[in-house]
Structures are given as structure tokens and as C-alpha cells.
Picture (cartoon, rainbow, N blue to C red):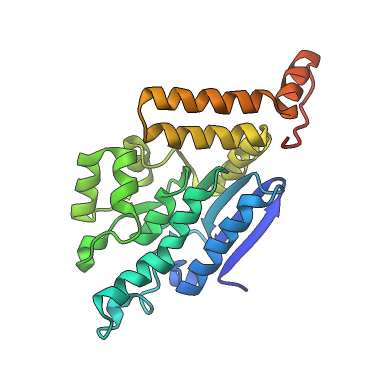
Length: 263
């Protein structure tokens, strides 16, 4: 069995971390493949939504495999340590930023450190009620190395993010939902079904429209109102001219399910 599994069905591409005995900790080889899969998903018309999850019910991801992280090797220079993060592990975050298809993290268990960061950088998060989450870096004397200091404040606010980053405290799935870290919480036995249902709902929508909505949302978050409105008027004009937009209106008029072709 591969450490990282990839499957595509019904418009949903699934990346599965498959090292349950190691709490789905990832290696550098896994990161390289992970980034490549995201790059492939960007141009694969059969993929409309991506789901990220882990094998088993114990852990979503416990972060980087401890046997391979830089501080396990005292001979590495600071530049070499930086390169391990920036040139390898950060490739996943950069590929996700470039991917304008929605990505859902299905958090099936403990998510710690870089494992939590990998969930935070997704667009949506569904958590099993038994999941527990912690940034955790401070407890091993490290700064958040995989984007936690960037993503977490944007979800829960600066003050709450600092509390979680500075203490390394665990939060339950219900608490994570209350503070906005995750979108939905379901019972463990319902997680796979709930994730598939959400992914399928998005995958059934017009693909170009979905991608433009994601793009516009992130673009608008980093710009002023006038620029955001100018951008969305362009996106709107492009989407309105697609065959799928016409199909959506025709299907509504005819009271039938639409058939979208991504054009």
C-alpha cells in the first residue's frame, strides 16, 4: 500500500494519507507527491473538488515524520533547515494557493502541528466529533512551520490564534467549530458520508462558476472594495457567457436536473 493514495470518482479527487501506524505523519517523499497531485488536479477536468483525509480513525495527520525533520539532524545549517521547509514542505501550500478548485479537509482524528496546518490551508473542513486539534509547535520549542501563523488568524481571529499558538493547547472538534476553525462536525461514523455529500454537492455545480467563486473570494480578501468589485464584474461577465450558465437557466425553467460540461 502506498503512503499517499489518490483516487478520482464522480468529480471528487481524494488524497489519502496512508500511514495509520505513524498517525499519518508525512515524509518529504509524500510531500513531493502531494504537491504533484494538486498540480495535476488543477488541469484535470475529471476533478472538480479535492478531498484530503487520513486512513483510520485515530489521526488525520500528526505532522512531519519525526525521523525526517531538520532538528533531528544537528549538523544541518539554518539555511538547510529553511530549505527543507520552503523548498519542500511549503510546496503543498503553494500548490493549494494556485488551485482554484475547492479543497475539503476531512479530519478523521488528531491533527497536530503541520498536520493541522495542512487542514487549515484547505478551503473547507469537516471534523469527526472525536477529532482533537493542536498547533503544538511551542511545546517542542519551534515556531509554526507550515503556515499556521498565516491561516489560523484568518479563521479564528488574531487573539484566539495567538492563544492557540502560544499554548499549544488541544481543542475539541466542537470547540473548533464554535471558534470557526472547522465548518462542520459530525459523528465519527458519519464523517466519510458527510464529506462525500458536501464534495458531491459542489462537484454537481457548474465547474467554471465554482472556480470563479473561489478565485473571487480569495482575491477580494486581499484587496479594496473598488478593486474587488471591478474583478467580480469581469468574473461575472465571463461566467454568464458560458454554456453552463445557459444550461442552469434552461434546467430551472424546464424543472429538470442540469447537465454541466465545464464550458
